[in-house]
Length: 194
Image (cartoon, rainbow, N blue to C red; front, top):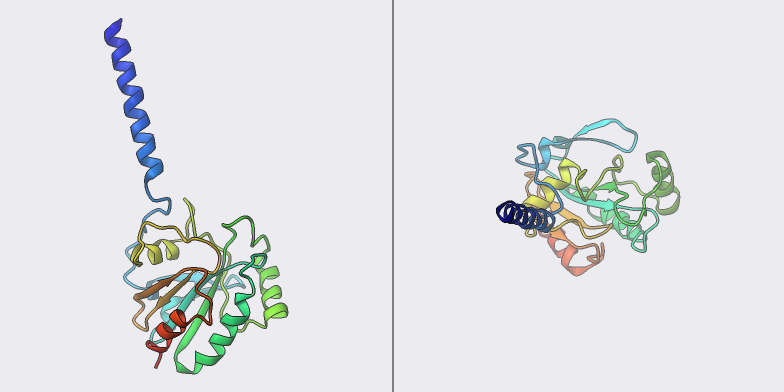
């Protein structure tokens, strides 16, 4: 009897240690595909049409997860200004709506598109809503996070930014608080555009 109680106790402790280890691990799953660069992805635009990311070969790309009902939503204005300033220099911004943070992007793709156009006159490419955090993280974001300087750290909030070079390789990851007019972000972009 004592032996079986001991075996059960050991099993419970081992199970608890295993469960804790699972919870302690990164929450964003590792990429499952073998993408070498941004150019290996195909993603749906805001209208649901597939877009090969290879279309952006030769361009410096700023990828941003966006939301319409966030305290950082006014960054749309700065992003549009940045896009208009640098788009003639092989630079593009790609907006990816995500509803991962306190339900701050509840709209449909059509509603998001209307909001961006009417409120901020957004002309940079917008894509279909996706997930940037958790078990259902989009493959693109799994890849971006894995290639960053914080490969086990989830996207912190809306308006996190990833700068990708003309070769499709990740250059730098920026926090949501790195605004479109921040010296850190602008310096990095300026040093990589042609």
